[in-house]
Length: 186
Image (cartoon, rainbow, N blue to C red; front, side, top):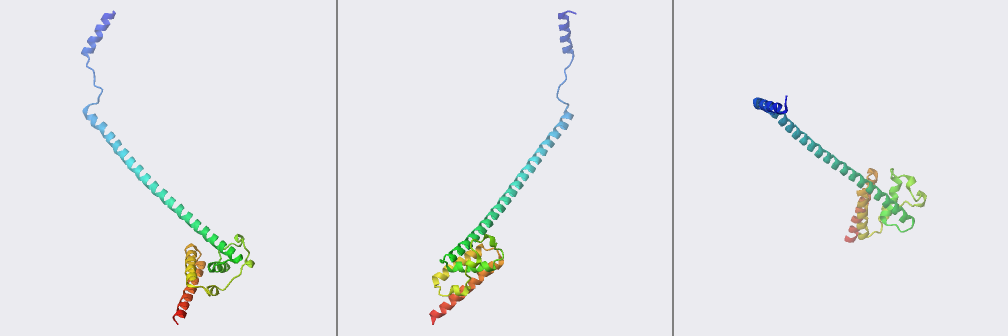
């Protein structure tokens, strides 16, 4: 077979032979669309689920951060309270104590959370004074300052017994103020 003959045969065949479409018949087109729609809705579901998970993770992270911040504040308050008590002990030992310092040293005797190993000053070097006698001779300004100092200790104190001690000190102070006011009236 010659080249020309072969070439003419192929053109004749191509003319006589109808080429088929590559696209599927109409009844199959619908079937092919449905999985795509299903895939689209599946991806929408996945996206929504992902968004919900991200929101939940963000919420959990915020809760964890809030808890860490709360713990940090609690630790800071504990540190401030310990430092205030140590400063009071040092001022009492050095002879420059304010009334609140004497009360803080008295609290040291009943403080069951106190660790004696943390004390810089041994118990025998500190005097314990009757809380009522500390209030004797205090003027209005000093009593007001004492009230503020006691309220600071109450806000920092976490031990129930220690907190009760400070509340009793406020009662003593209030009683002294009433007694002083009655003396001025007479």
